[in-house]
Image 1: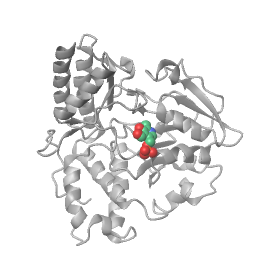
Image 2: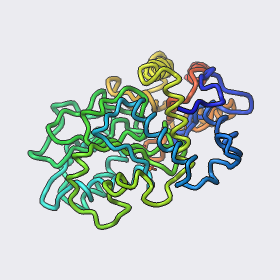
Image 3: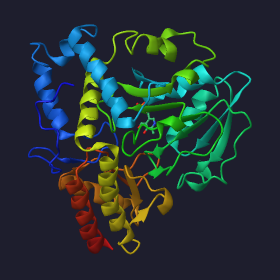
Length: 375
Ligand SMILES: Cc1ncc(COP(=O)(O)O)c(C=O)c1O
């Protein structure tokens, strides 16, 4: 494995000239990865050619792609029973590709609706077959994900599609929903933020731009046997098996995105793997949830406590005016991207893997000061 010239360990502080970036995505990337990319844009691996200027079929990119797949397998403990694919069209194309490939016209698929992104996935799936909305989250303002008892599953579902972390409302599944159907997971906003039991899943996908790299590439991990069950594949670019056969190079792939994801995988491994990443994510989220819970009701978490996301911490203030003032003052103090999603309102602090502990501490301290001033 090629080593990186940049030290891959993080010092967990924000460097001079950079701001604390709470954006929900595209989001902050690990600093050593960005620094390595700065060098490689000019001349990657001593080739005399920048990463964006290399042929996707040349030996330099061959090695980058091969390492990205191997490092992804190492990070996620992904066996050879699964294909690791780098596709285009973001997570949104997966909303359509999944039912197109795996939902037979006379079949049914289970979709718990836990937020805006699952609603979109449901809408796409309905174009191909029957969808059983196995949980109607809009009824509770998407403040939690379903318990086992709240899930109403169909018999012989072609698959169950769920979103492990709901980016907009800030909820997450502690564990995958229990079902006998093949499990499909949209892990876009928490891919590799904690260990993931790949073997429980038929397919896992994630747009890169939150935890894995820049926008423009989606990671898809699909079981080979499940992939073989595809029902209709009229267009090559929408056919998982063709992408797999072409080794993610059915056409010109997003080479820079794949290269960046490869660096992020190396960074995760250098950080100690998913257990270490999860431990840091837990402590980062705790800093913010403690600030909410300790505010005497000034801040109200959107998610029920048992479903709280460790990636997207969402909360409300006593009024929308105060929310606006909160975001404006925080921005002025070097904390960017805190405005809640337009569908949810309030405040959202997205604290993906690369986001530093120091930024959570800074925000918690700001929250305390703001509450004392306005509470
Ligand atoms: C959970 C989830 N799924 C899907 C998407 C859509 O991703 P993309 O923009 O890559 O299509 C997002 C984007 O924020 C998301 O958070």
